[in-house]
Image (cartoon, rainbow, N blue to C red; front, side, top):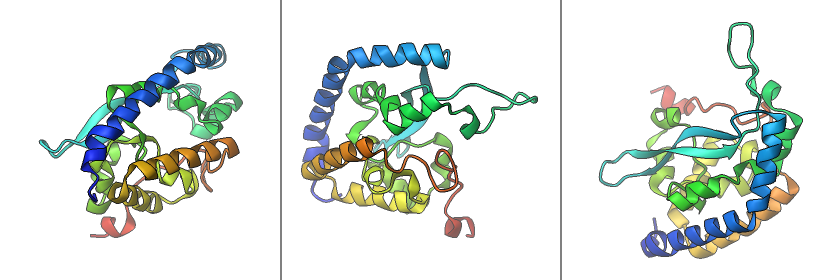
Length: 217
């Protein structure tokens, strides 16, 4: 990271708290409406919770594991063996709407307020991916994960995993107030255009199985 420690340690965290508190207060009415609709259309639980990997603790050298909060977008439909059906089957029209407008991510404001996440940063991914990263890819965890990030405004789920990780590391190396401001503005445009919600081959992003070159070693 390039001479950005003061911004990361002091300014960025303060801005995150202010933004999260403002969002929770200003959009409290929207939280209630969405929660009621999710309960009526998808049932319980209203909030989807999942363990995700966060920033590397410099003392332990390990990523912080935290619980991510989102509005639920899928049903719990299962096959005859009790296994969950594919995402594209369980993702309803209402769920697609929440995802395409990013309204499902509103509860992440609580993650930001708690310090698990930032407004801007690499998106938090599944814990099971941790042992699949290359050393270069793991550098994405040198900063807090974000509600939006560099990859999210430059292709989102249309990018390959390797492209996304390269953009994440690019952000880590160049993070600054002006970069974050620029990415927030671009995020608004992406959300309004509903761009890059699905990948070319899947309703949601495919599972990351590891980079091919790394798997061949």
